Structures are given as C-alpha cells and as structure tokens.
Picture 1: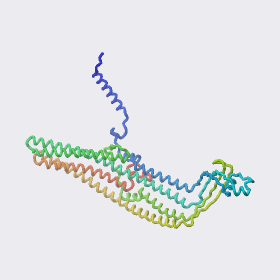
Picture 2 (picture 1 turned 180 degrees about the vertical axis):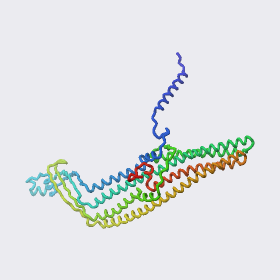
Picture 3 (picture 1 turned 45 degrees about the vertical axis):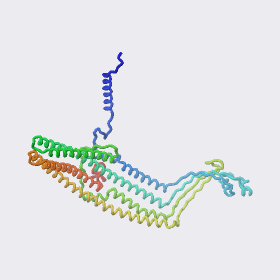
Picture 4 (picture 1 turned 60 degrees about the vertical axis):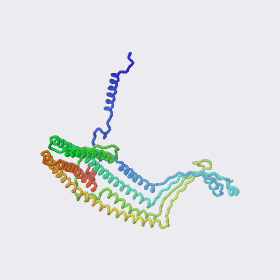
Length: 465
C-alpha cells in the first residue's frame, strides 16, 4: 500500500472543485444594475429617482408632517376628555367636613361642635372624569384654515422638488453620456496618434524622416493615453454621481442614446411658468401670511364653551366610589387686557404679509426672466451645435490633407500633430455642444414647470400636453 502523495489525484480533485465553484457561481442570481450590463434609459432613471432620491424622501416626510398639523389644529375644536385621580389628607375643619360630605359618610355625630371644630384627619381619593367642548373659538377656526393652506403649499413645494430632482437626473445622465462619448473620442485620438507614430517610424527607417519626428509622435501617443485615462476617471465619477441622484450608492450605466425633450413655444412657457408649483406654493404662503393678521385679531374675541365633571370620592381606595356627584357648566373666557400683546401681534403680522407679497412679486419676475434666459440659452446651444458640426468637418478634412502632405514629404510632423490636436478638440467640442443642446431643452422645460410632463413621467393637468 502506497503512503505517498498522489499528484494526479490532487489535480483531479482541484479540477472537480473548480467545476463545482463555477457551477454555483453561474447559478447565483445577478442583481439589477450591477456589472451584468443593465443600462437605464432616461425615463427609467427619472422614475427611480422620484422613488428613491433621499432629498425627495425627506421632503415627503416634511409634507406628511404638515398634514399631521391639520389634525393638531383641528383638535382645538374637538372636545377634551380627561381622567384625574387625586389624593388628599386633611384635618382642616371646612375641608374635613366637605370631604366626608363628598364621600357621603356624614352622620349626626359629625355635627357636634367639638367634632366640627377639631375633626380627625381624613383621607380622600378623588376620581374625576371631565370634558370641555369649545362652542366658539375664532382663533382655533383660523388656525385650522391656515394649517390646511400650509399643507397645500407644502404639496406644491413637494411637486416642485420632484421637478428639481428630475432635472438633476437629466443633468447627470447627460454628464455620463458626455463622459462616455469622450472615451470614444480619446480612443480614436490614441488610435490616430499611434498611426502617426507608425508613419514617422516608417519614414525614419526609410531615411525619409527625422528622428525628432518619431519622438514628437511618441509624445503625442503618451498625451493621448493620458487623456484616455482622465476620460475613464471622469466617466466613473459621472456614473457614481448619477447613482447618488437616483438614490443608489453604486455606479449606473446609461443607454447609448439620450432622447431629447420636446421644445414648447416660448409664449406658452411664459404663461405656464407663472403657475409653476413653487410660485403656487409661495402664493398660498402669502395668503397664509395675510391670515396671520386675522389670527392676531382673533385675540380680541372671547372663547365660549361648555363642560362637565363626574366625580367619585372614597376615603380608603383610589378609583373608589363611596360618594359620587356631577356638575355641568357653560363658560366664557375673555381676555380683557393682555399688555397690548394682541395689538403688536397684529402689527407684526401686517409687516410679514407685506414681506411675503414682495417676495411673491419678485419671484414672478424672476420666473419670467428664467424662462427667457433658458430660451436664449437654447438658441445659443442650437447654433453652437451646428457650428461644432461644421468645425468637425473642416478639422477632419484639414487633418486628412496634412496627413497626405506629410506622407508625401510636403509637410513636417509638427503640422500633422497640430492638425490632429484641432481634430481632437473639434470631436470633443461636438460631443459637448450636442449634450449642451439637450440640457438646454431640459432647462427650458424646468424653467417653465413642464419637465415631468415632457419626460412623460407624469400626466399633464387637464389631460393634455
């Protein structure tokens, strides 16, 4: 029997182990959005951000808190019911007699003068259920109205936040698209630089070129490689940035094509922008600032209500019931002098209402300016895109002619390298201007308040686009 090692057996075991590992790895599910190659379209990225973006989630919670404030304000108009348990021990003549009376334990002996004047200490456990219902409270009614209006303003602000997040997604999505296109430009630039280096080396080997040309060409190749490395880094950063916007900590791959949004008429956008969600939110808050004046004036009015109590008293046990009784009441509370507090609150509310009105006027003018600015930026971006296309054509043709002349020993290497630099710059500029044009369209939609409709992630108001 052999006791030594078996190399063949170990090899067979290792091969078997590797096969088992590969089988289980192949069977493992692949999560969406990982290196498996799933790419998000623009509308998918926007929908994901509207669901998972952390800033948007935070504002949803803030809006929900505003909704809860309506219930807090409404509670001032609803009845209040309370249960109270008290304990008291006393030897005071009046309190002692009253306590025994409430406990319904009065006897003839308790009317003796000595007993009345010098009673023994007595315990009292008092249980009371009390209710109070306001019938007229002007301040509470105005407070409820204001809380509802604030909740409506918060809803408008939340919708505007959705538009802001959608616009950010478009920005970062185009950033990824631009960075990916820069990769292609850098790869083509490197390929051209390597071709120039090859030509320089061939000409030098044939005795038709200079050694300095090969060095210049090699330097150009090294620079092209550096640009490719930088482009790769920028692409990785852009993917991570897009992931953060849509609520993910991972890099996000995007579709090859980025659809352009529709372009609306400028007059239509000017009209629609005045009803933008953030404008409507500020309008509601301005109205609430005016309601603050009414709220301050409500301090001059009384509070009218009714109430009642049912009470049990026991000298031995809490929640006991030796004696019981009830009472009902109506009350009017009117603060006749509060140190001029109400008057100053009204003055303060008046200034705050004027402040809010000025902010609203300024915002409407700013919104109109934003639409006009976005429209001019769009026209500029469109012209620059067309010019970038022309620039690329002339740069490509210029590089081709210089390359032919260099191959025919009619131009030096430096001319060919300069022509290549111009072509590389024109290619990168074309990518930049194309995406700037798409971003300008999105910026116009955002300024006009129609970006969610234009991205087709929300139905327009009234059922029409």
